[in-house]
Amino acid sequence: MKIRKKPAVKTVTAKKGARVAKAAPRAKKVAEKSVTFTVRADVGKTVYLAGCFNKWSPTGKQMLDKKNAGVYTTTVKLAPGTYQYKFVIDGTWCADPECADFVQNEHGTLNSVITVK
Image: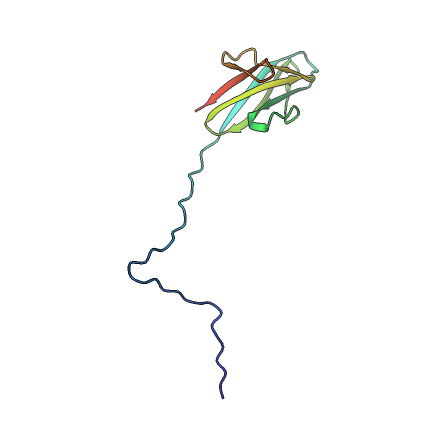
C-alpha cells in the first residue's frame, strides 16, 4: 500500500470573472532636499536647531561654528512642505532673525517658517 503525501502548498485558481485582490500601488518616494540653516551668535555658544521636523527637540540637531566666526550652520534633509523651527542658543529659544515668515505659537512667541519646494 502506497501512502501519498499532501502537497505543502495549495494551489488556488480564480474562476472566470472572479475579482482578485491586487497589491496597493507603492507610494512614490518624495525627493528630500538638503536645507541649510544659519544663525549668528557669539563665538563659543551652544546652538541647536529645533522644529516640527525633529519633534521640537531642543538638542536634536546641533549647529556648528566651523570657522569660529560666530556663524552656526547645519543641514537637514526635508521633503517638500512647510516647516516651523527655532534656534536654541545656550538654552534660549530664538526665532530666526533672518527669516521674514513666522507664526505665533501656543506659547505666545514666534516660530520661524520655511517652505521647501
